[in-house]
Length: 341
Image (tube, rainbow, N blue to C red; front, side, top):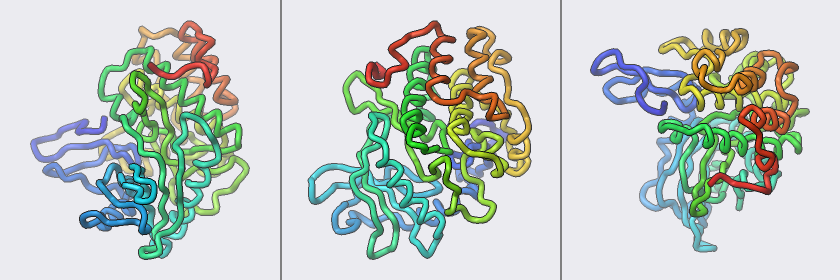
């Protein structure tokens, strides 16, 4: 999934892009940069020499992640003598929309207090480079993307998806829509021994449901196409909590089958894929996993309905139907009563 998925000969292959979710060609082990990731490529050139200190406070120890919107470093907070994660975005002059979106991300992350959210310690703009930054808790564990490379018992799928829905429900209650739920933005934190806590990452595209996106650039596609609902693909429909639930349904489908709900064709142009994503019904879970309960297939199909009116109205209704399809467990609908063990 995060590695080579199709090989044509000894030198050409395809890898699954973490930015757009589509397969791209790489040659002799070198990945060709996704056009969605051009900003990430520019940011890579700004990798710190040695132990750079950000804002006279955060000493860079190592790079821990990189995406289209920024680079994440493990840093030592020199004032509090603790390890933190610091995410650096683009400078204002490089991309005004991304700079503004980055600062909005910090405020959005701080809106909800929940075990499934990341604690934000600080944010601002570096005086020397003009780059926006967010200092937050340093996570230990792996992304759902990484976990999906290994067999996943149905009980593990159940627990992870239940926690995703509980966390999203907390944000949706505040009117916040994430808009980029995907396996790479779900983190399985193992900070507490014998316990896994699901954390939702990357709120760079998040906004309030009643807020028009004022920081988009032109016809920029906001989201990861493989998991995007039709109204998000076309950009003209109403984006609300049901848009996130479509993405959760797509992630659930992939967790259960190891395949995307909409077939991804190697080397398919992005615009061609987007046209299909906006109009083509997703594959049936039963067609790939006839061994699973029929009720579960129905839940997944409802979540991925092309028309938002046909989807679950909110995360809690989705969760209740999901748990019922698996035999029921009242404790899983209460965010205070359990964590994954």
